[in-house]
Amino acid sequence: MDIGIIIVNYKTAALTVDCLSALAAELGSVEFETIVVDNDSQDGSDSEISSAIDKHNWSKWASLVPSGKNGGFSYGNNVAIRQFLSLPEPPKYIYLLNSDTVIRPGAVQALMTFMDERPKAGIAGSRLENEDGTGRNSCFQFHNFLTECASGFSLNLVSKMLSKWVQPAVIPNASCLKDWVAGASMLIRTDVFYKAGLMDESYFLYYEEMDFCLQVQKAGWECWFVPDSRVVHFAGQSSGVNNKNIAPRRRPKYWFESRRRYFVKNFGKLHAMTADVLWLLGMLTWKLRNLIQRKESKYPPHFFMDAFANSVLFQGFEIKKTQNKLETE
Image (cartoon, rainbow, N blue to C red; front, side, top):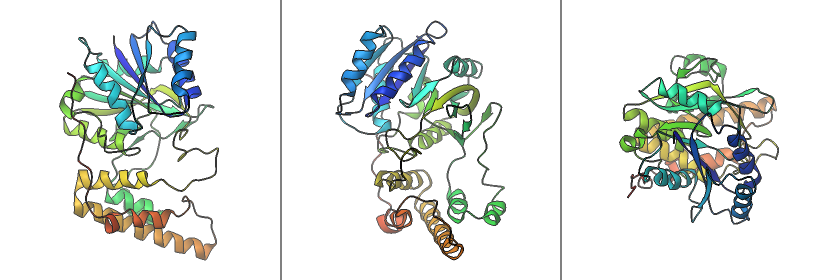
């Protein structure tokens, strides 16, 4: 087996079946097995996905595993990662694939070929795109207090002043090294887990793939963006945070908790506090400018007050202990 594919499902059974259907077309070009982890959907997803696997004779390469609880994205992936790594002959690569994706032909092969040619590459991410082929940004730089400053102020003058340190959000046309790539389509060299550990289960959702890419690079591996691998992404179907088909929702508390965890864990208290102060100050000035100019807010409902209430200024610096031990026995 070349690749162990993991799809975490949470109340997206129909999308998961479509995702599996696209994978089925890749059989023969790549040797893989797929584990669908149902994150305690409690909506009949498990039965619907199991029935589809039986109906389409996918059972030779696809199986469904219940996670036992909705522990979040990292938790669900770790359930299957541990299962793959406990095999007598683990796959060479682990491929994280969102349930709300459909791979374009050759997408998996493109990632594997790229990784095979670069022994130092620990992670490779795909170009994510809309159904019409237009790109969605899926490769980024690590967030730090400067990126939060630029994000908060949303002012061209500030962005130009910080341009040396804050990269513009562009979609590269060629493969390139990046700080982190989206976990919606992420190929990971299996050896990475033995050095960097599993994904941090203390993140429920959001920031976990950024954190994981950071830990992987600290362990000496590279992270690459590979646009030859193309994947359609229907973003935000499980959480609703980025779903453009519904009205903007209030940003969930776990989003802010993940953000605070990322900064405190990886950069320390002073950096986390600086990031929050600059972010909040920037948003406040942005709100004042909008009131004067009578423009609509770009943020979800109650975002500024939620950001303040969940910042280190209000919540402090205590975070959950990291849970990413590799236990395959």
